[in-house]
Image (cartoon, rainbow, N blue to C red):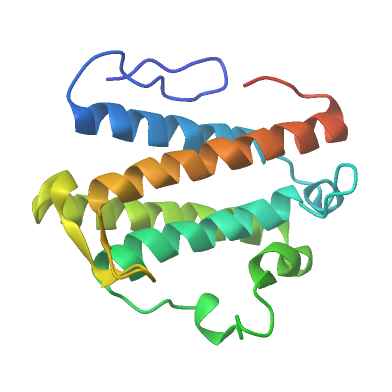
Length: 179
């Protein structure tokens, strides 16, 4: 059982095996993202900071896609499903970011939470089928395969980066600050 901080985030373990620590940090950063995007006002989810066009809603939709891409498409060689499968990504490579303005806060939150739940199931399947060293069947553009370990570390990095963005936007909405 992990400790939970005042925002309801599970504290990553300070000791343990590699998998426990990696999952602990991924869970912590997912929970940080949920905390930072916990606003119900659609206008707040569409707020930008400075010259950036980045929004909390766009981040939620983007991270839902990132979850699906790495834990389903890359790791298990599954085709992307709705809503990702009908997008013309060549014509609009940032569709996930800017189309979020058309989605309700509840729909965005559900899209992201469902993607995380599917990723967790995919992670469990991959751990049972080779562990962290399990290679992905899909190759990178340069021909190399990634391992499950690489994917988990990449996802931690992805959440860390976007949590910083979310922190700035959230502060501009209601003054909320924190890690």
